[in-house]
Amino acid sequence: MKEKILKCLRETEDYVSGQELCRMLDVSRTAIWKVMNQLKDEGYVIDAVKNKGYKLIQTPDIVTAEEVDSLLETEWAGHPVVYEEEQESTNQTAKMLAEQGAFHGTLVVAERQVSGRGRRGRPWHSPKGSGIWMSILLRPQIHPMSASMLTLVAAMAVYDAISSRVEGCAIKWPNDIVINGRKVCGILTEMSSELDNIHYVVIGIGINVNTDDFPEDIAAVAASMHVITGEYYKRAEIIADVWKSFEKYYDQFLQTENLSLMVESYNQRLVNMGRKVYIEERGSQYEGTACGIDSEGALLVEKTDGTRTAVISGEVSV
Ligand code: BTN
Image 1 (cartoon, rainbow, N blue to C red):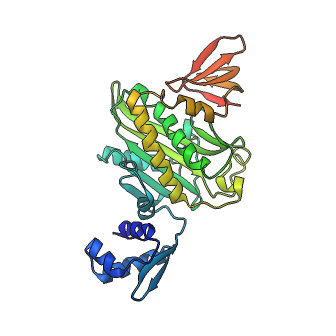
Image 2: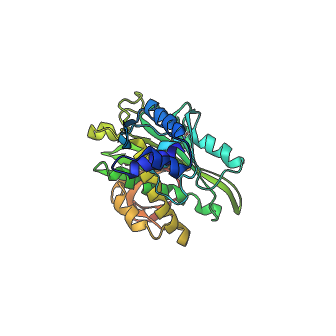
Image 3: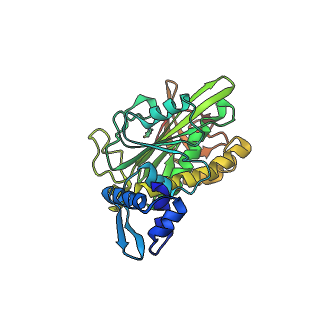
């Protein structure tokens, strides 16, 4: 009920009468009044005027299920939203929910992760109140070999949400979002499958939004949207934008089960394009020039001897 009230207050510029809310939600005035008080306790500023009703004046920067849900404009991505303030890792929670039969599209959001994880087992700094730590559960009917492309699909969506607020962002292959060369977002995709059948895929996204200090070991390479622009952002609005874009790119991906419909756009966003890159792949290291991705999401690299190779997975530094 709380998210329905929030949605209604958001959609109406003017006051919404208590009577109207009671009728719409089929609840008593006392029930509405209780929810209004809960919302005020959570930091929402709501003007209540006798004979006029309620008007939403200000929203807090929180990522509760109700706040995110009331902003989502998606058909399936983010339904339902599962919020728990403190979690070990939202990927871990999403995998647990997947094992229990949770639906395709379930979104797990945390305010803080105690042991957030990055790629290659690295820790992911996930302090309270400043970033977006979330994971979506997908049950795609695709070949397991195609699943790694979903990470690039997610990077496209996050890029849309960040670049509409901050200038100068780019995708660093395969799925980091960087601004002025510093990492603002990382994506960790995990899968449970048989050789020819996917049980589920979990895509975990970490975005440094309002973070203003980083641990010493990552301070030189990490940044937040706030550090770059000096502005503060409402995280739930960014979350809603990510999943709106994600649905669009996911549909494109499913049409061909590859990235052919977004390769051009991805390559325009690619920070590595035409630049020298150092590849570390299965123990070997080499240097070359990045020529963009192919429709399978591999990075095409022209080596110094003029030969071209497609890098499927590896570490790229610019
Ligand atoms: C990377 O190494 O770049 C990937 C970082 C992924 C971090 C996110 S935060 C939400 C989700 N939960 C995790 O433990 N990791 C991912």
